[in-house]
Image: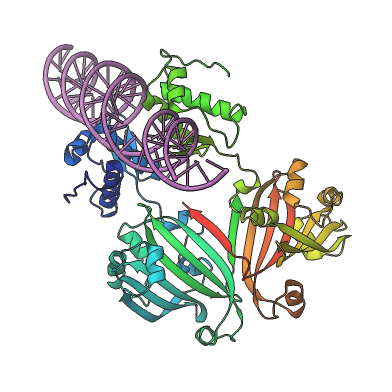
Amino acid sequence: MSSDKINQNKNEALYLQIKDILIQRIQDGEWEAHSLIPTEQELMKEFDVSRSTVRQAISILVQTGLVEKTQGRGTIVKPQKLVGSLGRLKGFAEEVVEKGQTPRSRLIRSEFSDQLYTEKTMLEVEEEASILLVERIRFADHVPVALERTCWPYDIGNILMQYDLNEARYYEILEHHNIFLKKASEKIIAINATQHEGDLLGIRPGEALLEMTRLSFGMNDHPMEFTKTKYRSDQYHYDIELNR
Amino acid sequence: MSSDKINQNKNEALYLQIKDILIQRIQDGEWEAHSLIPTEQELMKEFDVSRSTVRQAISILVQTGLVEKTQGRGTIVKPQKLVGSLGRLKGFAEEVVEKGQTPRSRLIRSEFSDQLYTEKTMLEVEEEASILLVERIRFADHVPVALERTCWPYDIGNILMQYDLNEARYYEILEHHNIFLKKASEKIIAINATQHEGDLLGIRPGEALLEMTRLSFGMNDHPMEFTKTKYRSDQYHYDIELNR
DNA sequence: TGGTTAAAAAGGTTCGTACCTTTTTAAATT
DNA sequence: AATTTAAAAAGGTACGAACCTTTTTAACCA
């Protein structure tokens, strides 16, 4: 077992620190789906805190839907839903497949950098940290549809770099490593294609593009992905259902 | 104040009984929106329970979104959402007001017509029926932001025609007549402004616009509104939260 | 009168204890 | 071996106390 320590002096509530550790263990697969997590007593002993503190931490996992409690039995890890469940929170590839086409990519750039200050701010990483930047052209069948520019924190970037980024479906890979998205916020604007963008997408400069900026958050509410995608408007539109 | 009692002997947890009472008071309007509910101390005294029990009850209200807590200040009743409740299903005016600006309109056209076949199909009205078409330029303060073109079935159009369409907030009016929206589907694309559109919006032709098409449904699941709005991209963007 | 400072108020965090209810386990019985 | 029964385990509910952090209020001073 990883021997995580909580810091009494740190300026963060104990139950929040514990919550983060528990989430980490679930995402690392240390505690598998359908299995019991340690009892409250055991967690009290491990972290040397009171029962109410442990219960506070766990109650957050319950709210998040990560675990489920049964009186007399214990607390089990719930199997995570797939990405599809979160409304429209899908990757490009998934969307293309749904339309019966074949998703393809061409990798433009992939590198770690510590210079992308805007992106680092969005991802809430340390001043000196590096993040991974990947730029790709996305195709549906053989038609260029979008320019995709995505940043991840260092840890996640390291995972993704093990794969062929020319074909990778990010969300699938991350799920495979038990990293799940909890929510995301998107901003959509219309822009005019630059000469360069027009060349890459095979359209005239000045054509209207749909630019979608997305910041995704993981189960621990930390930013996990910052991505900006520019879509050819003749090949893509954004649909959404609003219910109350 | 209503003097609700909780029953120590009853086979229901005290905090659940209290929770139900608190919810009742909010729904009855006894505790109004934006106002502070009694402090934990006062509730402890009233129900003769410990602080943690009161906090347990309130925490449920927080999860439900009924109240909001602020350390040092207290617990306030959140306003029950009106139209806003359906995610982003708001009218232009509401959105502008939320940004602290003043919504204005200039009426371009308003007429009943039986010729708009596309729109009539979307609204699922009879072959021979007339529908109301209203076109407006929408301003935030004095900046032209969007071109709005909305169609309604005859009955609803009749209601709206009683108002000054130059200033009307459709959704407010409809709510006032107890017509509520249940859901809507939106499609968003990017387009290039035509000469005419550029003139109306005060931008150059060819500038990228965000075009949002919305079909809204009422409580009876019948289409109630079909609207197409073209937004200046430098003045407007589309935000959305995706949760699982 | 206006700004500063100190106190009070309100929720936030953490500990400890006690007892209840449900489920599981193990022992006893048939 | 199957059933019944009792004990243990695990989470659920409730109390009380102490101290912290943020916000508001009130007193004070310039």
